[in-house]
Image 1 (cartoon, helix red, strand yellow):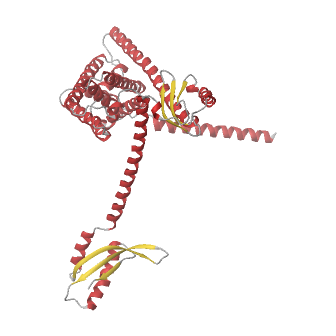
Image 2 (cartoon, helix red, strand yellow; image 1 turned 90 degrees about the vertical axis):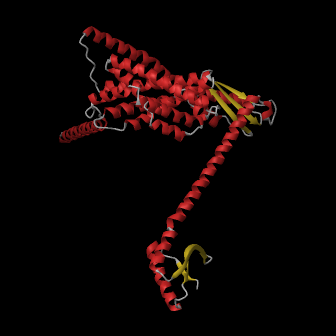
Length: 472
């Protein structure tokens, strides 16, 4: 009976300890992640409303930053594009839309929509002017990457918008320009690409880029809306209760209308990304046959097809059937169709493929080789820089020679070199100094000064081993 009571007491003690641990963990996590207590709602509203307007300084900053971004995209320079993002004031109207919908502020919403239109027109017009006069009319990889939306673009817009509004709501000042870089990442390049498409009559690229901009703008506004609601920003009060109810209904309807298609779009983009990733993994891991190489692969999410182009030994139909059976086992790819392109005979070659496919394969091979060469070049450059840095980090010879001249007036010339010495067991590099003394110095004084100079160098350069030789 006593043992049973002791066991019950221990169980109760453990339960109390576990409850206390969970409670303290909950308090710690709440203190770590809570942003409500340190939020300045009034200052945030004032700051957001102040950034909405596009006129005067903001307008000119936008024009200049669009020019810089267009130049960067035109020459495919990521560094220049990032530099443009640092000075871009793009986020104001979009954050204003999200916040005004959350707090039922019709006036701010109207002002935000108006300035958003001004921002878009001004940005596209500036980019159009640049690309119209630019001698480079070919679409670069940086421009092409902004002609269609991906899940990464949406994620950048979501988390960039969250970071911006959370940062703005904090008490005290935070560099909103720096936080705006994430917003500019999602907005500026697509708008510049719209201008490129219009200037070069590439309507599909212009439409895709504007579609990408619209998606990113919606998700930035939704992020602002969500954080504003989470932090409990006060709703705008109207003297007319009927108008207040109507405003709240309109704001809620706008939020729902925007939110539902955005969620559907996000899910579709997520599925497309998952499909393409799984297709790439399937080809890399499962499409294998001795003596055959995969030259090119294409995954089409809309048609649910995976095309692979093979060269080398002809793959038998039984093996292809095995690949298709494996494809059906993968959840994300089970409804897709595997299309294998290979020559009709053994040892097929590129000539039997279509001109378009052949050129695409050769281009891929060229780009891969180019990447390998560039990677090697960059490694060589890095090693050379490190070697030069190591050499120059030993000491500054010019500075050392001036000190030596000031301390030892008897020295006429001073030389330096690295001498490689070996005892056939190991090899070492020894810093070696050569001194030419003035003619009026005796041999005894030369040797005494040489020893003194060697000791000074040991201390001055913090080297254990070095050699000082007298030339005369």
